[in-house]
Image (tube, rainbow, N blue to C red; front, side):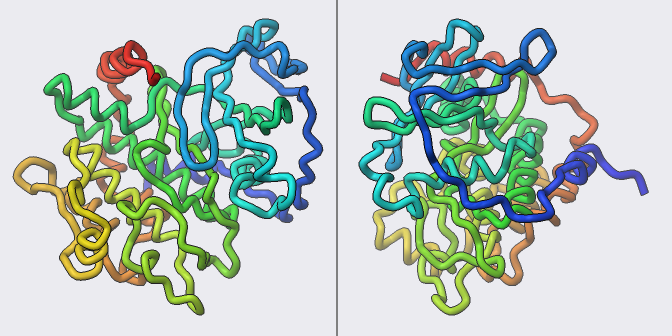
Amino acid sequence: MVKNKSNQNLEKIKIPSTPLPEPQFNLSRECTVVLDSNGQPKEFLIKYDDLAKQNLLGSGQFGTVTKMFHKESNMNFAAKAINYDLTRDNQDNHYLMDLKASLKFANQCQHLIRFYGALNAEGYIWILTEIMDASMDRFYQKVFKKNLQMTELFLSKLACSVMGALVFMKQSDVMHRDIKPSNILLNYKGEIKVCDFSISGFVVDSVCRSVLGCRKYMPPEKMQPNQSKGYNSKTDVWSFGISLIEIATGIHPFEGLNDLQLIQTIFYDPPPKLDETKFSPDLCRFVDKCLIKMPDDRSTCESLSENEFIRKFSNTPIDLGFIKTIIDEVVNDPLE
């Protein structure tokens, strides 16, 4: 049996045999990072005062993300700013989860955003990561604004990357808990990566119990969890299934519903589906496996990473021309 490339990539992921120690965040106005310099790793001392703020990349409940340029290394970073006052009294809170998760992942997964270091300056903790070129929500919006369609080749590569990220996080005993288009990034090279671990959780016996995340992407068991049983990583699978319908069609399947209608729909109506007259059977079946209501019957991220919809395009390069066309539109329309 010949193994496909996506599965071979997953097999290369190495997980530390022993858990990492609880990080102590003794951060200052500078940190040392390792960057690529002419194909070789090189250490640079990144000082907050040497970083030039540029445009806003995004914002959310746990902080804002700004593009920052470091002249000596000729490197741009995505810098997430978290108010220090919200973190200093309690290191075991979600304002620091982004940093804690990044330290545990240690840049071992190609499908997760790369972490470089962190600073403490001007009343904020600054988390420095690689900069990507577009978020998936802005990307798909530009696709449909140009009256184009999402190709199944692109959707397959998207599914491969997100499932790869979820497999790695599961092996690391971390649950993302906020999979949605705005937390999936891509760049001109065609790399697709999951970001934002602000509300991720370290699992105990493979489950979490606290209810966090965006309600539009929550599965039934997470909206009303059994406190004794909790919920597992299959909640992220459901969230990706909802995201995949949104990205493929340009419309969230629960668009226009208020909170009460949303809860009733998720609990009592059949799960959303793709139109079988517009999408291939393989893609429709993949989405259906993500959106099974009973978590025990829902597919795992491991099984989905080997699904036919991913395997059928494993030897086909992603369409960089399509990606460039759309990212150019995103870049030329910066956030204010």
